[in-house]
Length: 184
Image (cartoon, rainbow, N blue to C red; front, side, top):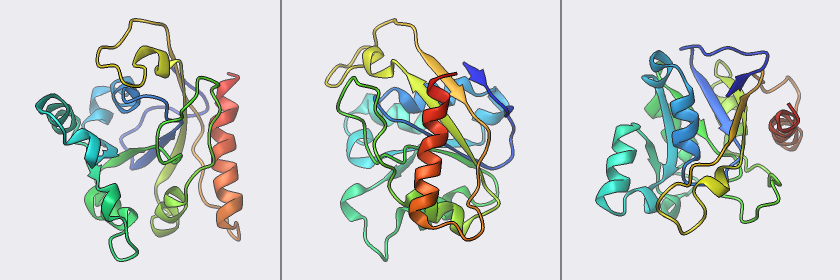
């Protein structure tokens, strides 16, 4: 684990990362110091993390904010729910790709617009890029038990929505901020 141009802090942040495995949220969360973990909530898909006692237990232990992907509508925005749930206390862990990558190539898919709207509505939140490597091999798709392999987590310098920046420009820049960490 490495912090580049950024240090752990309890200020309100949105940690945003590439997504390749169901272990991703736990890895980022456990990489944070205890005082930061107490105020950081991973977002997760409700349809997956509500199935079975073990997943429910993990989600509850992490104080995960479960998003019902089947009920995403204009009047039931996950962004509004996130803003309501974090109030002026909590930080979030999000995966702007919208789901796990399906390949081992390490490619990061285009980001969905949620992170843009989150920062537009809450410009005070620091957006911290996070790059994770090898998580898809630690807990491959369809597997239940993690495999003990080396991995890497890199936290980068915070970004914010810049004045006059369009949604597409911001999403491309946010994605680039994660990709840059791959080579560190």
